[in-house]
Image 1 (cartoon, rainbow, N blue to C red):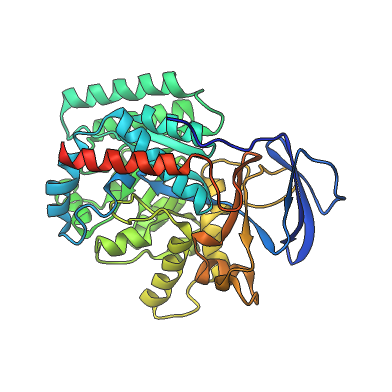
Image 2: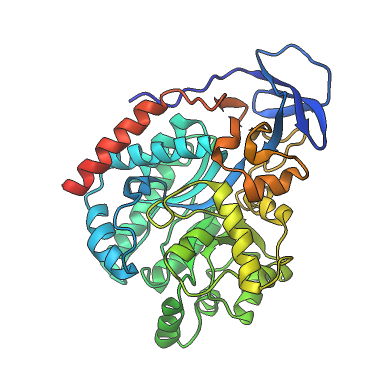
Length: 426
């Protein structure tokens, strides 16, 4: 199967584009933004930016990318029934090639909707690595670590993590290998402690599901006599490397502990609403504590989409609705969750359009009806825009999509449809 080809060139000039309230030029060389507002210099690729706005591309801070293959499969079922009768039995049949095809579809969807970085935890790591490398975007990738409190299984998982790290740590400059222990209810204390030590030794991020449901909290109190964050703090698991996804059911004390340890938290509003986790993300409490907050879609089985435009809108509206306060969160704050905050969390010199930053950016079509009139660009992006407003996606100084066209997209879609249908029939 062919990869998503870039229209790669070592220099790009974007002419007459709307940026920072005015019409200007953006010059890119190799993987960096070299000059903003300079003369119309020669470049190997020239993009007409008229009627378009330049914005930073998005960071999707929590995904299970290859679950695109499960989009719409078993929707509207109770959570446990959905997992036990649909998702887990089918996931057990997955091969590396299945994951490659599903992740490739995810990369295509993200390119088409303006995301150039995603943080992923899933099976068959090499399949995701291949997909991301070919697609030309960035990612933090981890295998799922689950030992189910079985010492023999725990040793197998540790061995897998060590081998994968050594084998793939230099796989691509655009890909970070991170650690993916699943959650406190699937991973033993001993494996979590080992993971924290391995992460510290190798300066790796840890991707983790935390306090997603009330049941998770209640079970933790019953088993350990303390809430999940308190338990993780006691075993030395929390640090600035920790990426805590969902984080809905948190106490005031737990928020203090997360802040004390410089943890990053990831809001997943669409997935949380669809799976009915019973509460909403306490943005203001986490913000006041000084935590870095990001935004993620979760997988397509529990969201159905990897579109960060939709995620931004839901994030804003759910905060306003939950707090009964229309000023609870601003469009600018939500936009930052999807851009600069993600760049900070995942150590990528991007998330903002500025000279010397990585050339990861989008051109948004200002002539779309959703973008008209243009009273406030950020408000339009968060509240009214959608994936179809993205005309051009650039990552690492390479044009991945222009005029909404990605090479090989039809082949990727056709292959994914075949694999998905075959997978559920096996």
